[in-house]
Image 1 (cartoon, rainbow, N blue to C red):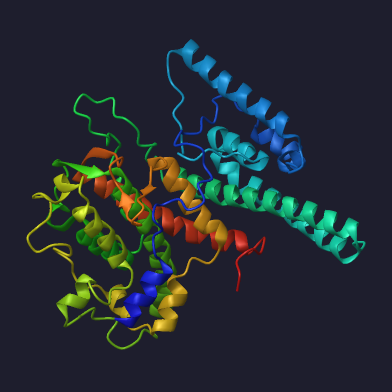
Image 2 (image 1 turned 135 degrees about the horizontal axis):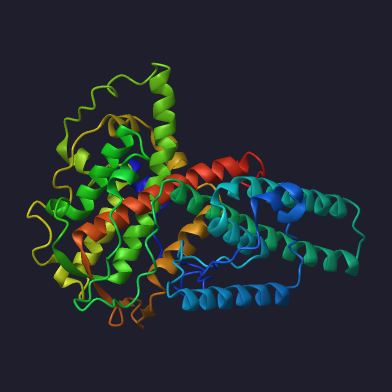
Length: 424
């Protein structure tokens, strides 16, 4: 019980999925169909990707508007449309630069990122040297304010570098990210018209991790986990919260799976991790001591009790409740062997940048919810939007979210090895 409380406190979901409300809307970023970047130009001019953070914002606003107009013009001339590749709009100069490369030559993104990280490191080192020789008095206060602004710019650029790398990993796997969920143009009102990509998503995880993901899906969908055609009307806010929780679960799962695979290859797994047998069915379901899957399950329990989400709970979930079809797994047994302190450490998202990415991406996907707190301190859900979505669409959302979290762990670790930003 103590272990579960530790995990929930580490992965607790805020009142809604975006705490700081940094993105101004759910619109997709239109990356533009005419890129000015070519492989030859990158080779000839290696400094082309050294975008300076201090460049005029007006210049980049102009570039951005020109690119969008160019995209719209080329679309209208060709009779086609420019398909967005990610729901989050990248706003920094470095982010916009990487956006162009993602569209034109996504295989060059890692090389461009390496150069950007070198530049960020150079800028940070220069700031640190200036701080050591800074004057005193009023000049020092002014300098510190300027340094703070520059540090915030670097952090935003770093977030968008991480996001671009995640998008590139999805593109490398030939998986299109789910577009922003807005009003449906379908006569039925159903919002999920995206491909499932389930086989491609499965290949991105180890067999042991995918067993855990299947259990995660079973906890959320109950006996509808295998039902892809039935449609339910569900609170959009609750679906967004489950998506955010699943991203965090994927981050946690990739982290423990890396350790599991290492110990497995070294043949030093704890006794009992190989057979994957758990005697307590309640533990397997994760209602009390589960390492993380209860986060999303609890969120959907809240959705069931939601006054406007009755269509979800009315006949949508098996009489057995959440956890229908959950099976034991080797990785789950391995995680259950962790003590509370170890579990808390693995369940903690390591950087503020990663937390911000989860919030921004989820808000870009689902939009900003209208949250009203009543004088009694309760949440007024009268303006909560309901969406029609199939259980197959829900399954796709959760699978993408878990994979997004897994990729987030990968790129955070990769970038931190070149530009240290993760707190010890």
